[in-house]
Each structure stands twice: as structure tokens, then as C-alpha cells.
Length: 290
Image 1 (cartoon, rainbow, N blue to C red):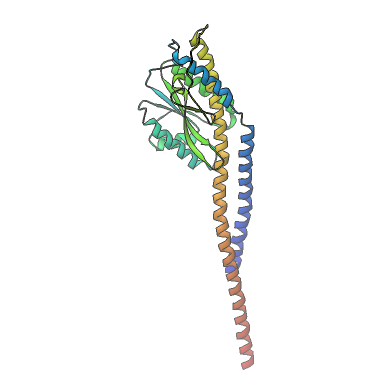
Image 2: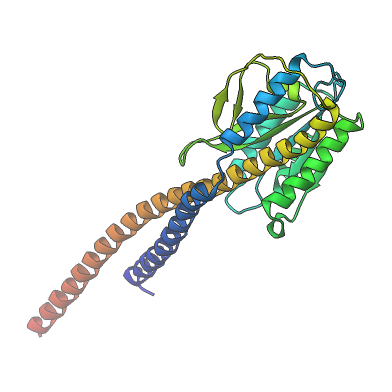
């Protein structure tokens, strides 16, 4: 095979690959904006919970879901099982490792087997992992995780729960984020960001006609499952954005390679023409001598 033919074959392969990757990037980009439109806005809904939790601050209750002195902490790490997510999973696991250093007795709960592998590489011990997520919708998964976390707090195995995940601030900005899920008292320390909006602390008092413990158990179920569902939706957005970004980088690299191959193809073509002309002149000279 001649040099020019080989270069032309490589150029055709790169062009075909570029077309495929462009389609994949467009699909990922469309997924991001489609998910963003479908994603339920829990901002107002979750704000009402924080207003109620703020009222509990001055209440007389021993409910572990409201305030808790247990030093043990559960750290929930949300990762992805999708392709092109290695960098995203690495960032969220590294952020989790830094957070866990603040809580020596922390128990790690991981969503995603790829995240579990990364956590183990970083020296973390994973107590529980949720795998095979493709067949489970976000709501059912949120309920499973909620039941596990609340049960640990109610049985005294843990005192608080944190969640770490990749937050898609925008299509181009993905950053690890730490949110507090329980107990309610810790949600109100300083400012709590819920659904991407800062919620300031509001002090007030109220008279409860029912048991705070019973009310809180019901509301905690709704609060944690709703918060987890929102986090899962944000993770889906981050997956689509991350895939689109990495495919865009691949396109830039292939475009550079395409330009180099096109230039090499032109040079090789000119060399073939020059070689053919030299052969013609040589043959003509030989004929004239005869």
C-alpha cells in the first residue's frame, strides 16, 4: 500500500469517527437540557421543611432525628455507573475522603460500584454499596437509601448523615457538594443551601399539640427521600454534562489529527506527482539518447 493511500485511509477513518462522536455529543447535550426541564423544582417544597425544622430548635424533644449527640456519622457518596464518568467519580470520592477525615468513625455508604472501587483505591472502607442502578428508578432508590439511613439514626448506630455528590451548577461547571440530611438541628447551622438556593436561619417559637417525635418521624421520611430524589436528578444532569464535555475534548483532538492528516495527504499527493514527472522526464531522456 502506498503512503498516500494509507494516509487517505487514516483520514477517512478520522472523519467517520468525528461524525459518530459529534452525534454522541449532541445526544448528551440534549439529554442535559431535557433532564433540566423535567427535573422537579423542590426549592419551595424543601424550604417549608427548613422553616418547620427551625421551629424545632427551641422545642423540648429527645427525638434523634431532631438533635443527636451520637458522634458516629454516615457519609453517603453518590457516584455514577455510566461511561466517561471516571473523572467525575474521582472528584466526588476525593471530596468525600476529605470530609471523612473530620469524622474518624464515619461509615461510608456508596451509590454505584465504580464509586466503591474508587473509594477503596483511596483507602476508604465502604460499609454498604447500592449496585445495578440501571433497573431502579430514582424514587425507589431514594426510598431504599432513606429507610437505611433513618433506621441507623433511630437505632443509635449513627448520629448524623451527610451526602456528597457532583452538583451541576451549570452545563460547564460541575463541582463536588456536601449536604446535610439529618439531624434537623444541623440543617440550620449558619446557612443551609437547599435546591441551589441559600436559606437563611429564621428563629421562632410555636406550640405543638402533638408529639414532636411522631411528627418528625413522618416528616423526616419525606424530607430525606425528597432531598435524595433531587440529588439523584442532579447526578443525572452531571452525567450528561460530563459526557458531553469529554466528547467535546475528543472532538477537538480528532479535529487536530484530521488537519494534520489532510496536510500530510496533500504533501504526499504532491510528492507522488513530482515522482511521476521525474519518471516521465527520465524515460523521455532515455528514448532521445537511443
